[in-house]
Length: 437
Image 1 (cartoon, rainbow, N blue to C red):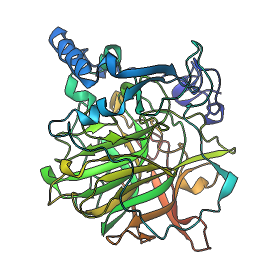
Image 2 (image 1 turned 90 degrees about the horizontal axis):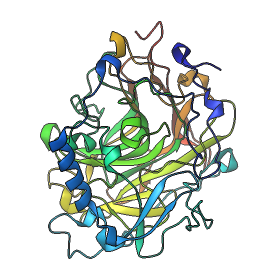
Image 3 (image 1 turned 90 degrees about the vertical axis):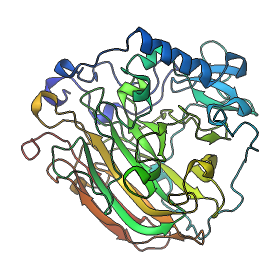
């Protein structure tokens, strides 16, 4: 089955599954993304390569890697001593006590009875061994860190580009009512999302997993949660979701990601790439891919994600499924930002459009189907809630919006049955077409 523009791209139905360690989770060979062509990026020069190597040397020491393996989905993992991880290398963090779980917990979360219709995929950390005989999980006292090498960094022109939400263009403002993104089908960042302006200590949603088509290796497609406060250079966010971004990860697989900025995207970083997020769990790979993805008309896979502010003086904790993975320390944020609480929650899709050939990108959002296609066709987020300043889950009332319905759209619903889908939406679209040029 050929894909967009006759590139021989396999349909989404061909992308699910988990195989042998050296191939599992990889997109088929036919599903190669368009290279930049006229938009070709220069590689780093010798001086920049030196900066990149010094960054890698300072991220963590080889002596702090207690185990290495290739996961069952093909990711190369370093097990780094808990105390030596990148998040503890920031000045002032060296002697800080590591928290293993939040001191408080949000309350009032309803039971999810959706069951096996939405399956949680694994990330390839198992009790098995890889092709070299290495056990495929990290020992206690260490954390799994996705290996990142100089060859990976060479996909970027500058060291700073590794940390930016996307290099080569203005970084985004969260798509909120306070600071909406540039509207229309010509913006670099385009959205279909649902937001609420409300004082909060976090947000949660269950995200449907797909491997979307992304046209250029320097473009991405994601589904995520934003928790924010402030504006301009005072904007602070914590973000998490599922992202396919070939330039960053080197393949065409959607991956679990986190991002934060304390200053309106002037600085910030993905995953564990800078001294920010402190991971405490051994079972979740931040930046890791999944063993299975949803297929059109077939099994739907999903992942529940959550940010939780541990009371007014605690840290911003990430929860994946039922696992507390780690936290952004409160000290990263300002009193006028999210150090005490946030002011907005947002849920939805985002793509990058580099205008290849002067036309709109053909990058998919979600599954590539419009929301009207519905269950087993379009991507969704469900059980959308925020956590109020008393640490209680609230369904709330989000407002849906999109930049251009002909490119990407969103449809909101409310399931009021006990323990059902709650607040949810279908979203997405195919990008370039006769209604999106």
